[in-house]
Length: 418
Ligand code: 3PG
Picture 1: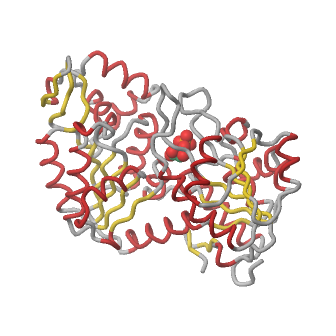
Picture 2 (picture 1 turned 90 degrees about the vertical axis):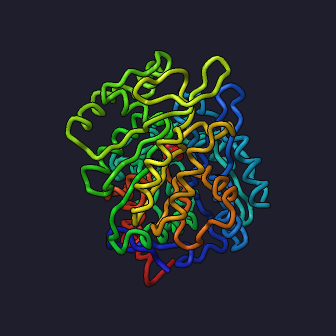
């Protein structure tokens, strides 16, 4: 069954016969990485991808995988070698790692790809085209797409969480070879449409995490498009907006926020001045000289690690009245059990409400299992998407999904099929 995106059909794996075909799959295996050990901290996106991979192999396809990991020169910009091992483990299918993307080594291996085999190419952002935002037609003519597409009969985009990027591996291939949605992407589209179709209000967005420059743009889109009636900030995002409101932050926090915001502080100040419905925490759990205590947001001290109890109550009341609740990013440093409560309590409040609940990020799976029986099945969707999810919810088109819709019509994938 095809899925619909902005009124246009996108073909899925149900619409194509993959037996004996050579299939290029774009997964989003991008995972959080420990900056000092460079080890993967959370494999949930890899585990999600395993399902599509298993299906393709069971149905008789030969599979090559492309994915990015991190951003060039950042701590998490690592090779995909560990991902191959984790994906093998999660899928039960042997995944061979090839330390190349568009060079001779990759061409040699792809030219003899057989049914049942799985090859994972290295970090796609080693090739600059896969980090450059450009129109799909330009990427379709680019080096990555022209070098790789000749080895494949079919392209599968299963990287919902990277589909807000107009980069080569997302938008270029489906214009050149038939492109369909993988199971993760299909599941996201179906669940999100279910939550949003009824047009229920209010919609409350809880935006946290540490990707600050993206967060400012997203809060901007969410509040200007009317997608969100209210944005409740947590994590480092909250500290940025506190700063934008003119509050003083502890020196080290101030420096961290400035470094991560990459020049977006001024835009955050403007959003506040324009009266956008952005809320900030009343208090934080902070750590100072080995002590953990509650600090008021108006006279913040120490290193803020989680939202405090008054903030939990303040946000809980807003979540209780919502009809759609989207939580993106953790409220604190959830890897440390001392700073997990904010995130857990906000999820608990969302589950106790009558709202459709969308949780953005794999770490929420662990939070949900911690909350056990409070989970109301169908109304809760754990999305793989961070930025992509918010862009989807704010109504701005996702280039990767538009490219799939274009592919469905260009290659007549819906109705007739391959
Ligand atoms: C994400 O983690 O949101 C996606 O993998 C996209 O990564 P990016 O923001 O570096 O493009």
